[in-house]
Length: 336
Image (cartoon, rainbow, N blue to C red; front, side, top):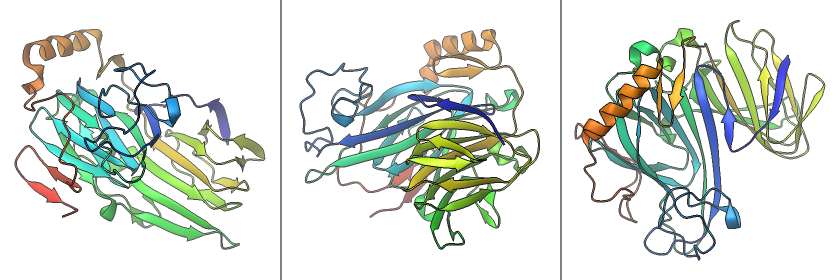
């Protein structure tokens, strides 16, 4: 039932069709009125701040935490924000603010620049941030798809609430795939996840203390990995699993999970492998080295449409609610 167990680091190893996953969990302080931290930045490696000093990182940001403009080609990013806010801007002219349960599903396709900044909008209380960024590969036929993104707003992303026989609660946030009669919103149209036959699943599971949960079996030939990122311990197949470990698990059997004495949270990633060569260099993921070189050449020549914003780390106004303004001019407003 458990094929392999590995400790988790900063970048979590994944298997085809996924490329990797990162879990950002930052205890940001109050904001400074300019959406940066009202705290000293002394002692940080600014521009490359990943050391969790004081419980938070600036990452590549210099005044506002986050990731200023950078390019991608050949894959997708699925950004699951459990707490906090992200400001998105891209080279196609789209922008938005999302968070607190929202998911952005972005298809980089033939090439896109984007920025992901973490605005600290609260000036009277801390600004905690927690998110997953999951890189999902594209098959060769879709690597040059038109870049786009889709918002899976928290209001439309189902959370399946169940109880075990003793009445202890289990919550499963269904971001991709389905669980019984509960299905996630449709992913981006060019995604490997858009075809049900590929059985792509992204779930965030929360277990009450001592709760018991059955993970259903699925078809053979699917890669399935469970990431135990918060809690004390689990018992699976009579093995005790400690926090911050990844488990490669069987798909042919139902997996019974018994939680320990504190609440636990898990991320499930599952999918049928694409089964194509993966050549990756920095922000580009293609099938051949020649395609990687072409990606660099194209970016140097075109900057994937250029950068239409007045700074490389743009943020929206501090009072702006959640919204998305797409490159075709359509707009979704979630908070007025």
